[in-house]
Image 1 (cartoon, helix red, strand yellow):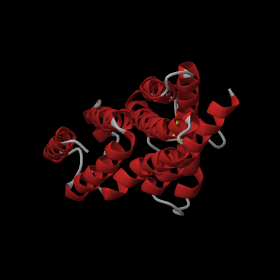
Image 2 (spheres, helix red, strand yellow; image 1 turned 180 degrees about the vertical axis):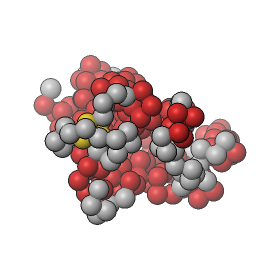
Image 3 (cartoon, rainbow, N blue to C red; image 1 turned 90 degrees about the horizontal axis):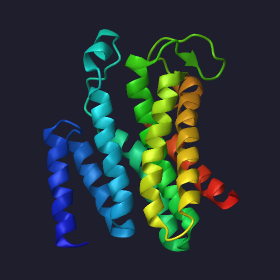
Image 4 (tube, rainbow, N blue to C red; image 1 turned 120 degrees about the horizontal axis):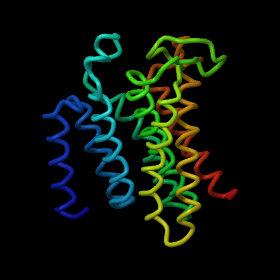
Length: 232
């Protein structure tokens, strides 16, 4: 890694901690994760993850007063579990891509990040703006912020979140750009809904926590990204 890259990582780590986007352990974990992603994959996957951090932080602060009134704000800082829950799967897929050196590996990398971004935007925007939330498993009425609850606004936010990462992913390939855009966007959107499905089932039964849900969803989203890329 270049000196410039290392300095950028250090700067972003300081900003993340000072702005309370991450706590101390979360910042340290994000730094290590960023180091390996930047070293193995270069700037594109790093940029996608950085976009996720920024958009997630802004989305969390979106209509924060309304969320607090509804009791939907987690006052805890994002820590090591949250960082690994959203960032470990992309790193694993990146290691696979380094080994196989094939475009569907890149699709998996960006689809896993798209899943994380889509899920965060769906949750943080859907909670204050979404009307008539429904449980994803049986479509019964649900409370705002209830595990597994989805709204139309949240679904649109998820699609947008996946699309933005899909656009970044197109720069990873010299050809098949539309395939990359389509596979990452579709997989990211589906992955976000898989997150809701896990939340409505395994997480409600306390078999996994939110960080575990995020990891499983990003892992499935990445696998779907590779499969869709190979099929279209």
